[in-house]
Length: 145
Image (cartoon, rainbow, N blue to C red; front, side, top):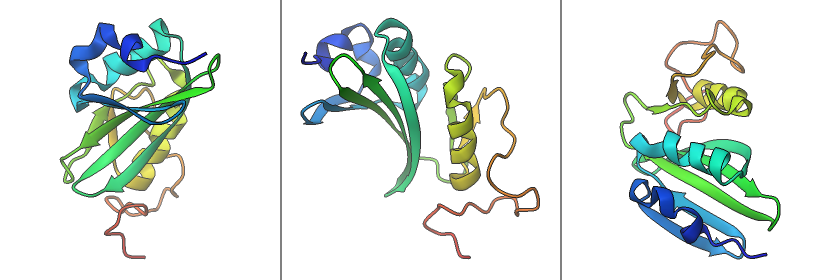
């Protein structure tokens, strides 16, 4: 079974910047910050893709959050990529309120990169020690140990 991601995303096409196939069964969907929740919610609730994990990246000029989904029937992966340009106060709406499996990974990204997830049900620290200094994020490129 071949997954037609462009057809699949047609109902939310106005909320997506671009869709590209990186290779067979591997898709990237670039999404503006303000549409991450409706796009991810659509993939999860309507298309019934399985949420796998999220990753955070200190990329060139922005922070990226990538939400990875799997279509088990075809073995395809769809990644919703969001670029957060505000490096001084990076934040993104949380997908955890409708996808509880995202709770811990969003907390991990918050601890390690300093990206705040607005609306997260439990935004307390997960990985860093309670006495870790505020405003110091070990996976940022400017981190100095």
